[in-house]
Length: 181
Image 1 (tube, rainbow, N blue to C red):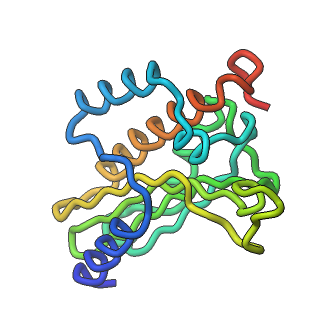
Image 2 (cartoon, rainbow, N blue to C red):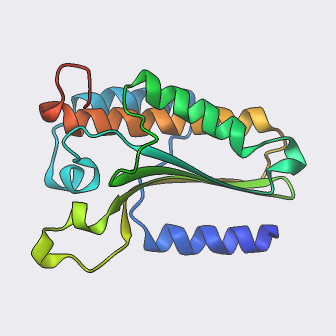
């Protein structure tokens, strides 16, 4: 995949899918985490993330990582560990999945953290559009100057933490203390 293709794909995805603003720095990330943790849950948040505190599956989509020594196994191991610590991970067949998309080409990277839910879990049975899934929470990132796996893994860790914070904030009323079911 060429840089031009990745840029085009990023533009299309950013235009089509609902997005969260990517933090510009670590201090911005911390501020977003603090504000997100105390913010009121609104209907958009419930639509995006409400699952009655059910656990999520993990999927990893990596293209071009071998050029900088990045593997899907590294990404999966890191994110699975974060989800396990938050007591949110399952490898069972469930209605929701956290997808990590990473495309690397010629020193550029496009990264997206994407929460997918089965349509029947998003809409009432009467309104279900048929089989498939919907992306309800999405956080994209593009950088034209990435040349090592550690930088990408660090960004993935930050974005996964943002997802976990949002997910737990929205699902807090359904969770038994700190332990999602």
